[in-house]
Length: 122
Image 1 (cartoon, rainbow, N blue to C red):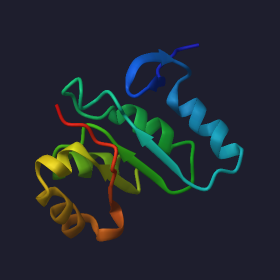
Image 2 (image 1 turned 120 degrees about the vertical axis):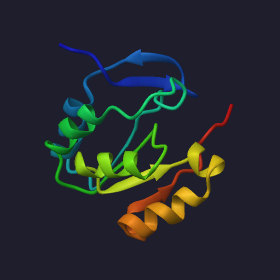
Image 3 (image 1 turned 180 degrees about the vertical axis):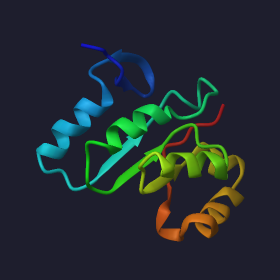
């Protein structure tokens, strides 16, 4: 079994658990009504969100699907939505560049942009 999803305490000491799409599918089959997916290491590793994982999860769940982590601009938001997310969660970038919230809401609709309060800035 390929391992790709992480479990961590305060974003430290990540432990591989199970591929995100498999976990999402199990949760969906358990009748959850919404899924929030954070690529928690994307920002710290200074990389974009893992779009392929977003696509794989979106193919398996048919509920509201919010995605965050590594979102830096409108193009990242667009790519994430195109991959299957319904909402975009921004945190650290919203602190660095508050305009991203307005720009994202204007481009994709205010219902699409979520502000996450757990962001950390280094």
